[in-house]
Image 1 (cartoon, rainbow, N blue to C red):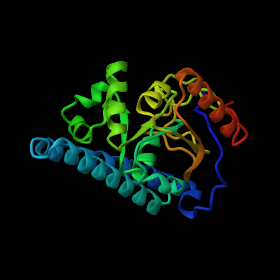
Image 2: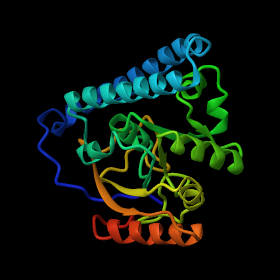
Image 3: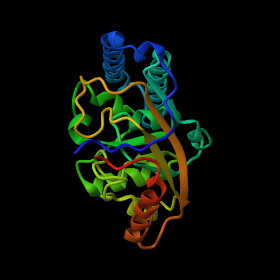
Image 4: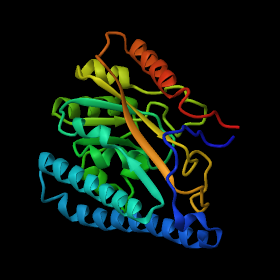
Length: 266
C-alpha cells in the first residue's frame, strides 16, 4: 500500500525541478540535505557527550532542547532555500513558550518530529530506547531529557515529571507512520499522561501531498517535487478522568479533521 497522502495546498511552480534532465541534480541536493542533517546530528551528539558531566539536569535539558530545535530549524531553512522541501509550521509559534502542554500529531513522514521540534524548543520527544542508548545518536537526546519508550510505566512517569516541570511533550499517538487513510488507530498513553500531569492536549494536523519518507518509502527514491508540508492547529482537550475516553475523542477528532483534505491511497 502506498503511503498516506493528505493534500495541503497547490504546488508552486519550480523551474529547476520541472525539467526532467535536472532531476539528478535535485536528487543530489536532496541527499545532500539529509547528509548535512546527519552530520549535524553526529557533531552535536559528540559534543553533548562532553557536556553531559558539566551541565546539571535542568541546564542540560534547556541547552539540549534548544540546540536540537535550532539545528532542525537550520535544516528547514536550507531545505526551503533549495526549493525541494517547503514547510509552513507558523501555526505552532503561539505554543512555543507555553509550559505544561502535550502536542499530539498525525505521522505521515519521518520528517514530522523535525517540523514540530524546530518550532517548539521546550518540547521533548518519545524515542526508541535503542536510539537513546546508541553512543553516536543517544547523548544529545539524553542531554535534552528525551523520553525512551523501553517501558510504558517509565515513559508515563518521565513524561509526567517533565510536564510538571514546565516542559512540552510531542507525541504521535499512531505509534508509527500513518498506514491507513486518513489516520491509523491510536496506541498511546496520552490520556494517562494528561490525567496524571493535569495538562491540556493540543491536536496538530500535519498535511502533505507527498509520499516522501512515508511508510515504505525508500530514503534514496526521489519523490515528486517540491515536497510541501503544512502544519495547522486542531482542537485543545482538557485532561479526562477516563484516559481511554480522551484517546477515543482525539482519534475521532483527527479522523474528522484530516478527512477530505486529500485522497485515500490507491
